[in-house]
Image (cartoon, rainbow, N blue to C red; front, side, top):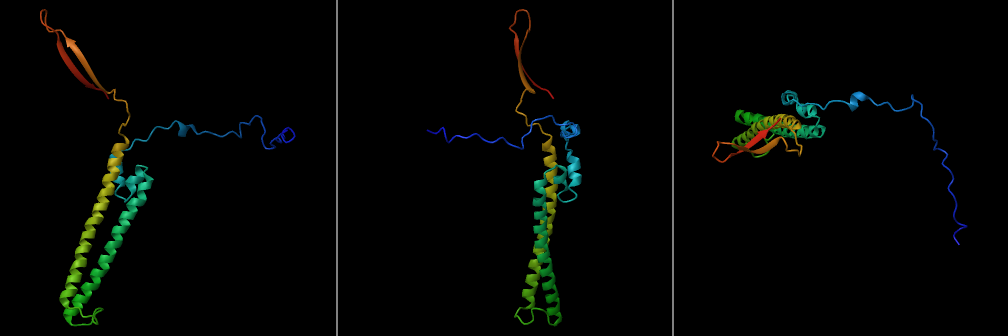
Length: 186
């Protein structure tokens, strides 16, 4: 009943079977195949960390570089905001003490309030310098620790630690002495 509806497929015109000439065969660079794994030197990572994000680049942790630059950019943006407002209120406070007009003259703000605003922005600015140093130090420490741990053996093989019980003879009429020896091999 279905025999009349079955049809064979037409052969594929693209598929050809033959010998590929040596010039057309893909070339495998044996230098890439047989290359030794990179040994990460923590001191080098620390030196590269003098450039923000450089330690992460040295450790080939590319995904961390935008995080480092975002942290630096955020702290610098807040630092710039506090610096500009500190300068505004410092200038206004100095002009208020001199009895000259300033940008806040129309608003009823006395010299004491201008001083409080100036001091608050100064305190925030100084705190941001601390955060800038903390971000710089944190990225350097992270690169150093990452370089240390890249060379760490995380193999499940624990045979380098061997516990060996031994029985040592102690004398002709005495029982043997039991000794447990813990040996670590590199």
